[in-house]
Image (cartoon, rainbow, N blue to C red; front, side):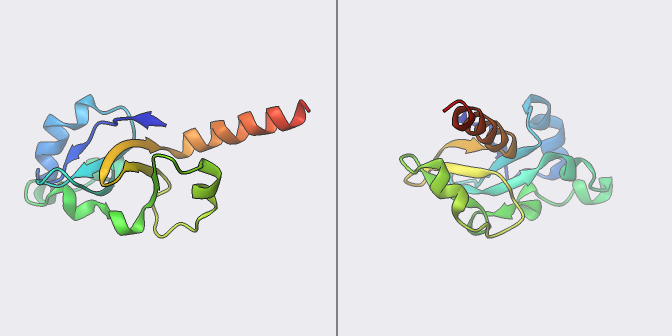
Length: 126
């Protein structure tokens, strides 16, 4: 899990996001913040980079966000195995980890793969 992941400001135009926020991001999937500070969902940075310039200048990051109700979420004390067993509700593969309504982390598909690999090593060692 990446604790306190960087966020995209959803109210920015895609153009502003690519200029101001994207250069400091290292992951391809980023949580998107609403103007009130809450989390709106997740955006794919590569998808945002592929938006035609005329559209990127007028549309906001929120317009391309997979909304929170379609994302698998976990609370701070949830077991990862229980969260992964829940059916996905949308196309986003990452899991947002919350403490109440506050975002505290993100579990990426790469994190899940590492956890599976570690579990298979430990189960094979028994």
